[in-house]
Image (cartoon, rainbow, N blue to C red; front, side, top):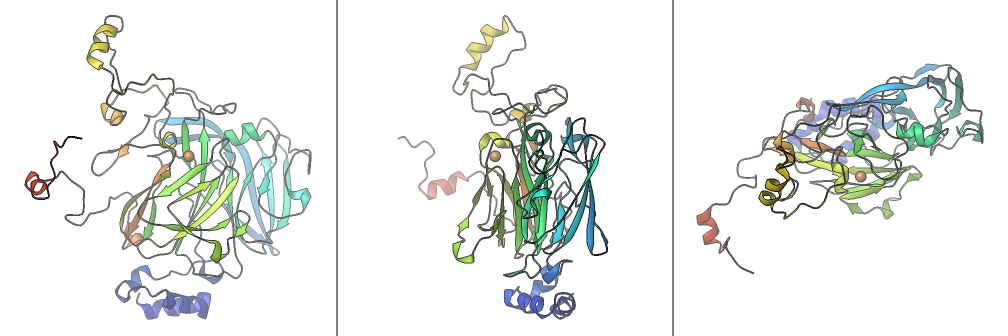
Length: 434
Ligand SMILES: [Cu+2]
């Protein structure tokens, strides 16, 4: 498709606004076809939201009302191959499907309760009649097991919101009952995005070998997730170089805020769950703090191709199922310790004396139904991270990308072992003393 064709389609779908915006964005002519701003299905050509590892709630329109059904239920969930747990979610998944509508939409949501205890659904951040707000006791009777309640309201405000129970929040949210809500603006302003993703961060306490997350935990979370998946179970975000990308980050973790950091680019926070941030108040960042109970929407245009890390910057949040009760072993004399301990425990081996990296390569057995602390297969070696970690794949032709392939680095652009002659010529002495 060349630019002319694209403009035609854009004009047909989104009117002159879309076409003129595409021209104003000034994508290089030779790639115009590939990365043309593909018109999406929502007003102004906004693309549909992609929920990596997730789904979108099916809505059926009847007499001008969009009707949806959420079923609160126990769900067997896989965080990443090797770790499965008995969770609670909606419509057979953890987390629940993303609700995607347009500003001004009238909706009717039926909520069926298949849990062993009552529940409700609170539409976090949405302005609606008080009696639809889903707070058990305060605004409604709890939905008893086997009952179905109905919520009906109008999404009067565009933005990104979330849903979760407001009955026994501690247990129900700890077991996974959360989801995202996207309300597209009726009349979008500003540059249109080409890609739109929804990610919800969460934290879980699942002891090695246990079958159920512990809702009573307050500090020691050991499974940290994007859309209920721990790396390497997270699906990468595949985007085009030069495209405008939006990522909606929601946080419904029990206790922790997450500073989400993306490599290879700078972004601006454009919306929160409270509304749109004025353009004059935006500033560039590479890390955005997403407080628990909040949404931060970020937007950027990647200029560098590659496989870029995207992760929580709390280092314990990019680990899987680690225990914290270890003594500090960095710098310990392993040979001396091992010799003495092996007299009592024949297989004993001191670990961590040279740091904790590379543990995953040791192929140590892990307890049944648990995952190693970190590690996914990378193109160079094991990627020494887990948990709240995913990959942003920036490609020239993102639609041809299989989502699993690795970036092909141009020759001479990968950091590698230095050549001793060159080091000498540059005045670098590896044996320098300080
Ligand atoms: Cu975190």
